[in-house]
Length: 385
Image 1: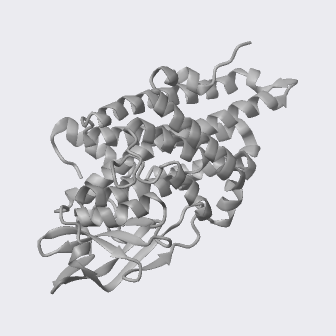
Image 2 (image 1 turned 30 degrees about the horizontal axis):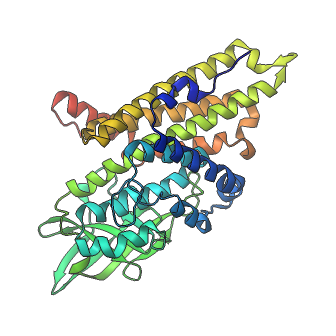
Image 3 (image 1 turned 180 degrees about the horizontal axis):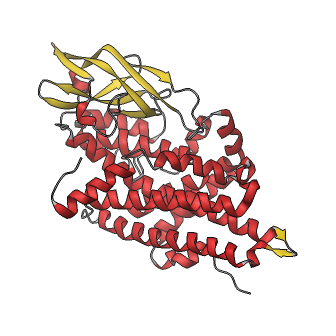
């Protein structure tokens, strides 16, 4: 009997151009050949595959959707597909690319001086300089406007003091985009390694194959030439987050797709009561429900990617996409785990690892609740934060 895979159900091939299909194929091949064979061991060991970063740079994935300065200049849909394939392996892999590309590099590209762009972006696109993005603080997550990090002018320099937490790439970053309160409002600074210290976050139970830590600035002296001249106010870092959420929304669907594919294969091979469990109605119900939601989310992602490419994607739409897709992906991982029964908790089947990671994506880059209120504000005109 003829079968259909998830991509056939989505009908993606008719929606993609040749370049987008090529990006999807090349990233998928890299993930399967280089990252998947080691991901279980890396996750269990709390390691990130930093030695494979040149492979990501070779495919143009660092700064992928930025123009010029050695960046690939991919369209939004191609970049979304790349995130989709990366997270089909692990959320930590996609998270590294998102932070390097959509946060650190994007902040310099959008708010930096020409000199800053020329100095940093080609090196970051090549993977020779790694970046992180310092906005979240120990006491200020959903409300970054309450940040306590301060930057005071001192002659030709700025003195930056404060602490940031839950910072992807903190321990390996050569530069940190740090947001701090100045006398004139929120400003952004390129803080170089040596001007900040990094700290570990021990005992993580999610995103274990991702480098996550804290940044400490204790009177760091940052030259004025490292201030982002076009970044004025909280709107600047929030626009970076909006850009990054798009990649998250695409990435989590890759994790959901991986979980569904594992569940389908397992159901075909697992025999109970004399037949494969794939022949059981309740198992087919689970698979059909998961597939239906992932297909709908994928089509929404394509539509919003085209709007983003046209410069017409509103932040409320990004919130809707991120909120919807994270919910669907987490539910897909949980229900796929149930299809696998007890085997679903074994590392070799990958599903519970995805579920644990997706618990984090449900929270980071804006919690589910904050995105709910962003959508509500767009609909009503009233802010309920």
